[in-house]
Length: 181
Image (cartoon, rainbow, N blue to C red):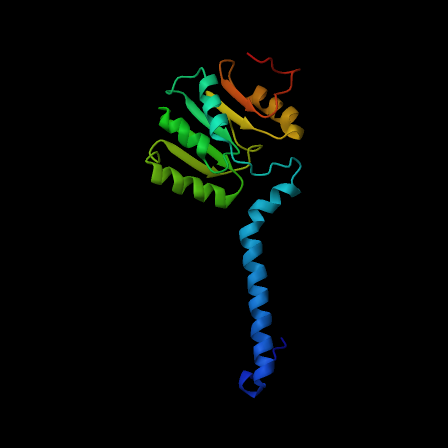
């Protein structure tokens, strides 16, 4: 192994300053990538699902449309900042879950649930919705991108029971597999 020791005290103050500036720049780039990575990597997946927070109006409409009782098991696929899951807990759902790929959004959702007093009824996980088993859920909310709706329709058809209440926001499920109520 070859290792060269650098004697900082023998360097001129100008060289040391440049080295510290370079090290600081590298550190800033690394920190920026660590923080921004979870927001950028969804663009590299088969289905691009950027984080777009639900509006208060959308959240309100979701719960107006639900037929499920609060005793049912609720999940939001791609739960983002957790606002839909937290509202489900406020509406009386005792098992309100959210799955999200972005670790920062999962952590934020947990914190938001804790501060809103709903943490005993909510659960947020970092998980890939394509690998997550949905068979135990009676109520499912999907904020999907247009390109993923055919695939998520197939997954829901394969994994859910006939009376599962599914709310699809922004884009409809595949009409060949599902009919809207």
